[in-house]
Image (cartoon, rainbow, N blue to C red):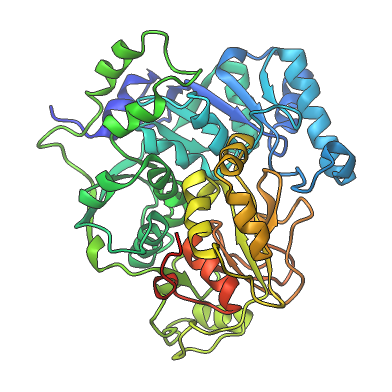
Amino acid sequence: MPKTLFDKVWDAHVVHEQAGRPTVLYIDLHLIHEVTSPQAFAGLEERGIPVRRPERTMATMDHSTPTKKGGLEVVAPAGRAQLEMLARRCEEHGIEIHDLDSRHNGIVHVVAPELGRTHPGATVVCGDSHTSTHGAFGALAFGIGTSEVEHVLATQCLLQNRPKPFEVRFDGALAPGVSAKDLVLALIAEIGVGGGTGHVLEYTGEAVRGLSMEGRMTLCNMSIEAGARAGMVAPDEKTFAYLAGRPGVPEDFAGAVERWRGLRTDEGATYAKRVTLDASKIAPRITWGTTPAMGVAIDEPIPAPDSDTSRRALDYMQLESGKPLLGHPVNVVFIGSCTNGRLEDLRSAANVLDGRQVADGVRALVVPGSRAVKRAAEAEGLHHIFERAGAEWREPGCSMCLAMNGDQLEPGQLAVSTSNRNFEGRQGPKGRTLLVSPATAAASAVGGAVSDARTFGSRA
């Protein structure tokens, strides 16, 4: 019987299933960080249970970490307690950890692929909703809650109800100036924040095949914002080239690649749902409201509200329908996060900022997703471009994506952000967020207002 990519990975990890009950699923890689793991470790200690497979767990410090120099000395007390507890628990249980002194430290969803720990066909979980990022490698990757973190630590398994496969096809090639971030924002606007509920999205089509691995990670990262359990892309030669030579790949890499080549949807396989978008007609996107689905092409006007929710969103954002966002003044620009903090993203922003200046009165933060990204960017001289333009070049971390580490908006400030969520107060109490691509963010920093990077051209 023909199977989808999702079906193949799910079926290969079933430990036990019984009609009417959740499936017991084996987990290949468990990623942890300082925010959702302390209670899980405490639960193990109370019950006297060890970590079942510590070699299949990897920890990073990312959410509470400051992005200014100083390490633990500049961490707020609550964050420091979380970080110290994570380090202590990992030492007790023999878990690999990349702390603030590690050359591999950074955002968990950036670091794991960099180290080759994310494999095609694997199951990957983390106490973080954007674990879907790892689906770019053909893995089944999804976020879990703290009680589930404890369960995986104790058993290396997880109880899960089987989701349904959903094909998202992007036909055509991307137009110049359009990125993976624009694709996924267009998708979410099309199907809504609940359009993928109960499903795993499989991204297919010419535009997806044309994306780099960094772009595919961005696409899968925001699958959760459409309500999906996960997002996946079938592995191909780009996937294998990205993984080759990384420390965490299988010792018999050639043999692994041969196995991974079979991880694609069979001809004749059935999806529960399908949607097709013409990627060639997608323009750079921007959100106007308080969910990622409330978005338009950057040169379109804000639509008229069609519900109490959209009316409340406009009131919160202090915006008017019928008017375009182009030219609307901004206070802060944030370039970074697990969505857009990779080297390709920084290059895109630097290409716009090169030889230009951040507008007076605008604060621009550029935060690499990991130390490896920071080193690579500095080797290319990107940090000089950012600093000469007047942007802040920071240390790796989640930063302003979730405003729990000292990087946040002041009440009422409007941010143009490359992160993944624009919920009320997400980037700081009463802060307002417009989600965009790195190029759009950089252009808006220069313009001092929402700007279309396509009108800037390149100075390279």
